[in-house]
Image (cartoon, rainbow over all chains, first blue to last red; front, side, top):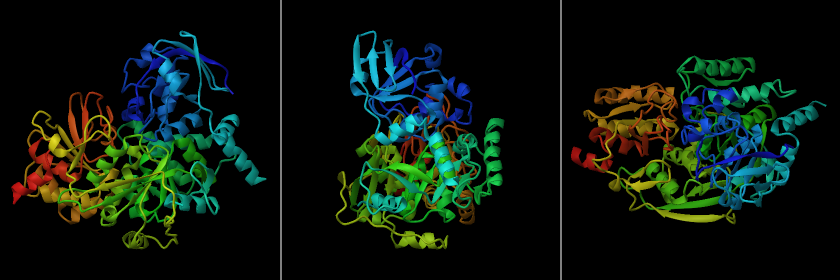
Amino acid sequence: MESTLRGHVHKFGKNVDTDVIIPGKYCNIIDPAELGKHALEGLDPEYTARMKAGDIIVADTNFGCGSSREVAPIAIKGSGTSAVIAKSFARIFYRNALNIGLPIFESSEAVDGIESGDEIELEPATGVIRNITRGTSYQAAQFPPFMQSLIDAGGLVPYVEKRLAEANR
Amino acid sequence: MTLTQKILARHAGLDRVEPGQIINANVDLVLANELSAAVAIGVMRGMKGADRVFDANKIALVEDHFVPAKDAQSAKLAKLMKDFAVEQKIKHFFDVGRGGIEHVVLPEEGLVAPGEVIVGGDSHTCTYGAFGAFATGMGSTDIAAAFVLGEVWLKVPGTIKIVYSGTLKNHVYAKDLMLRTVGELGIDGATYRAIEYHGSTVDALSITGRITMANMAIEAGAKNGIFHADEKVIAYVQERTDRPFMVERADSDAVYERVIAIDVDELEPQIACPHTPDNVHPVSQVTREDIPLDQVFIGSCTNGYIEDLRVVAKILQGKRISPNVRVIVNPGSQKVWMQAADEGILTILAAAGCAVNTPGCGACFGGHMGTLGDGERALSTTNRNYVGRMGSPKSEVYLSSPATCAASALTGIITDPRVVDAALV
């Protein structure tokens, strides 16, 4: 499990879709660092210039709606963004983020209590979100037990490897 | 159990499944295109012990997003998938000129049947719900896992039942019905849920109409959208495959999270305005001289079918499109293209001033072959209109039926096809 994440917040609204996270014209790129240069370009062309490694995206409901492109969370991670906190996530983006190791947290209270520029700290193991700037803290929603077991196992890939090893025994 | 629960229970080897339950389901088909496959193949290469796909006959790989290759980078991805197909002896590999848009191709090739579970590395995989299958889109890592295991983990969704009643007026289509539905649900109104389509209106729809509706279930955030397979669907599938399949039905005591009734008697053509597919208004509110069109696009996995092209050709026959607008038409597959050629449709469209392209997804997602520039506005038969969806973040996309697109191509502004049709008489 990853250690504490700390960074400044860039706050966005609801329904941040995959077309603005990584516009279609970049979907023939597979290198994470190259994708990272265009993260959020459709919504905020200055995002990658403004953000610093470790910064955190905070957004309203339905983050990542739209296409199944796994390059969307890969681009966010590739930009150096350390995590996304949202009131809710679109279904495919949620799976993709966990599968590629982009930490995501769901908490309406945290989103309402955090503004752009705030410095916050995240504990991936417990889901505790601390707003250092404002001295508040929040508890993100727990992952369902099956998802948590996948995360604890290191993600879907180790899970598949274990299944293959068992099948070949 | 609902139709979705019934299919998932059987594929998980369980008598019963409940919404929220996590299951491992066997899959009947795993789909990827050159973009999702490129990432999935990379993930699979990195998996210890994952040398072979689970079944070379149960994977479909379709070159459709950046093809014919837009540039060298796109060509690299297309080649990566082709090489993988050869190495793994993938039976259902479709290169340019022999396939088309994945969701148009798979049903044509008999690769989709009622009661099946299909996962694909494309969000519009939900299209196959038109055939009574459970079908859902996933990202590339999940697809890589499905490639090697032949199964996926799924959270069983609760189901929203939508019951449509009434008769669609002339020049009001399944697309209008679905835009109205997405407008009602909202773009996250069905997130994590199944949509089950019911009622006399959809029973009367053609298979193409049901495809259009199932295709856009994801636009309300749904995991899948599904119809009960009727005789029409069963006959269509049996003409294309000898594979046995099981037609499932929702139980009469199935429990639904919500039931929504939509009456269509008074429905007029619908338009989704920028910049979300749920920003839906009747065409009469959007027919305005001050929103002129630069481009009309007709095609995609939503509306790139022969039935759609016939509607368009009927409206454009013997006419010239507005000098202010360019019209791009992409038949959805090689078979649709050939059928349209046989019926003289391609010539009608070209004579009207339309550019007719080879099948592909490029224009819909701002990839190539129809990309919008700064300040441009398009009316499109596709499924999404997010900021920058078809190109520049400073462009605008409106969504409609093929008939509304055709009528608007003649006038250069968003136009009710019934007005144009009346003028023709």
